Structures are given as C-alpha cells and as structure tokens.
Image (cartoon, rainbow, N blue to C red; front, side, top):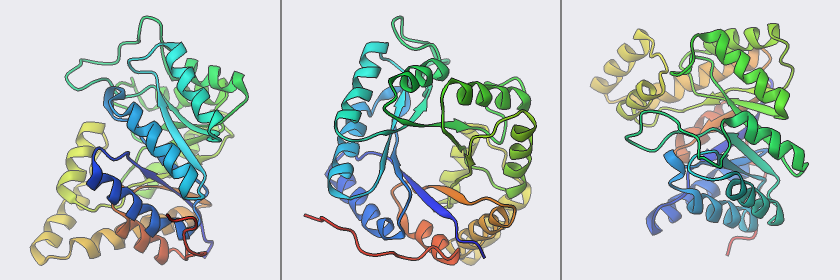
Length: 288
C-alpha cells in the first residue's frame, strides 16, 4: 500500500490548559513527519492574536513547517496584510487563505469597508507579495451559500487562478464524495493539488452537530452505525475503522496526501495514520 503524506490542523489554545493540550498534541503527531501543520482562526476572526502567537511558538519550538490561517473577517486590507507580513518576517511562509466565517449571530459575511471582499482578493494580494505558499478551502459537498455543486468548483478555480497553490477540502463521510468532486474539478481544468480533509470522529454527537452547521450531509448508514456502536460501547473502534477504510479507499484511487482535522485530540488521528503505514520518523526536537 502506498503510504500517504500527512498534514495536521490544530486550533489555538484559549487558556493554559489548552496550551498544554496543544503541545501534547504536537508531541504525539510531530514524529509522523507531517509536511506541514496549520493553526485555525475562530469565527469572526475571534482568535486572530491567539493564532498568531500559536503559529510563532510552534514555528520556533517544534521544527515543523507551520501554516497560518488568515481570513478576511473584521479587518482592513492593511491590517490583514500586516499580519501576513509578520508571519513572513518570522519565517512562516505558508498561509491557508480563507474568507472566514462571520461572527456568531451574524446573518452572513459582510466585508470590512476597507477590507478584502472575498478570499480571491486576499489570495491575489498574498500571491503578489511572492512570500507565501498559499492553500485554500474546497467543498466536496455543496457549500451552504453556493447555488449548486458547479458553483463550488467554479469558485475553487477562481481561487487557483488568483494564485493558490493547493486546496484542502472540508471533511466528508464517504470517499466517493471526494472522488466525484475531484473528477468535477479535473473536468473544469483545475490542475492544482486537492488534498482531502479528514475528520476522525472522536465524538459522534459533536461531529454530527458540526456537520449540520457546515451543511455536510450525513449518510443514514453512518448514523445507524454510530447508534449501534454507542449501545455496544465501541465508538472508538468504529471511528478508527471507518476513517481508516475511507482513507485506504482514497489512497487506492491515487490520493497521495491527507489533511487531518485533529481538534487538538491526537490519539485517533495517530491510530489511523499508523494503520495507513505512516510511522514515527523520530522524536520532537528542541523541546524546552
């Protein structure tokens, strides 16, 4: 079996306990030699400073390539590019460029009066600087704001044409969802790498609620499988098996890289990686 390259997404800590949890997560997953790790923004840009601090700390102390999330929400162009410039000066040259989710309670995204109107404008400005490898989001299932699946592909092509180097997809529950999306993108002339986003299901109730908020369809068989597993207290076994099987199918269809949404809970992600043949390459260096 082909062993895939892997990358991991973390979210920034909000308190001391969260800081320890993030560092523990990094220590568990860093030996798997990820090609990069990313640190998210909260909805409405609420964790902007936390993200910046977490990115700087991981870059200095972990030895990993760190990608910083950057959004258009609640900031002017000058402020947004200023943050990007700070990343570049610190040696962080990978950015995940996103429009960003609106603040909680808002009806939808509203651009800052002096800000970027959408992700394509942000991507273009970052590409013009020449400082960054730029990754963007993609949606195998229809984005809640998209008119149809074709609109999602068209929007992704606009992002790639604006200067993006790679797309990372939203999570999904069935391999076929990604494979159909990949085919639609190829038909549209998109040649940049599209890496599937993988969400190991640590908590089914939380994942189900998250999927509904994101507009990600939940297959009936997945609902039924977790209902049965909960009765038998085998949720972790089911989650590991389903995730591994889906990733194995993707690899069999030519996927050579996987991006894991860890939720700062590394154990299930680690177990799936082990099952796929992704083994530790060494130990985390420069630990204080």
